Image: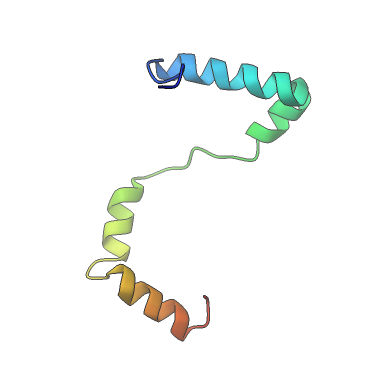
Length: 69
């Protein structure tokens, strides 16, 4: 099991920051983090609403029809 599996969210954030800083330096680590946003809302509710009645197969069919995959 990973040495990080029993850490609190704050401890994971600190460990992640330390790893990023070690590998990328403080400026690179900050630039990396600034590429991501936490976001808003409830993605689970939105996803259920958006894809209500859909299956993986129907979604794939629609994407193929639109030539997206």
